[in-house]
Amino acid sequence: MKAYLINPFAQTVTEVEYSGDYNQIYQFLNCDLFTVVEINEFGDSVFVDDEGLVSGKEQEFFLLSGYPQPLAGMGLVLGCNQEGESTEPSITLDQLKAQVDWIPNHLLRAFFV
Image (cartoon, rainbow, N blue to C red):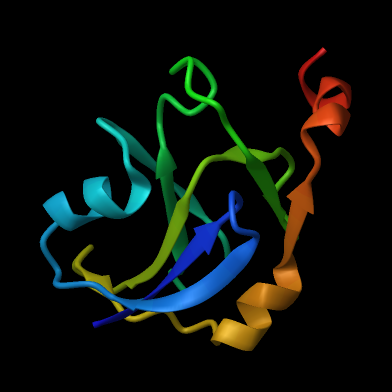
């Protein structure tokens, strides 16, 4: 199924193919644990590295319109149905791109001080 990968290292948002196997999320995010942030009222969410702020990795960050804090590392956007199963996102790639802002590392002190 279609998903979107937010890559703050390359500053890109691209469409990717998600198999439906949650283990693939770890691969997309290059992490050991992930968490989910709801991004709209239509069931779309972004999966991010749950240890992104404490992992000791060199990290890049992005902001999503309507979400109050920066998100660390890669993000994978998927939809969700009423049964809690992952689906293709309802948001379009162009809509998502318009909602993503990249944060230069030197500006992060304003968020985390």
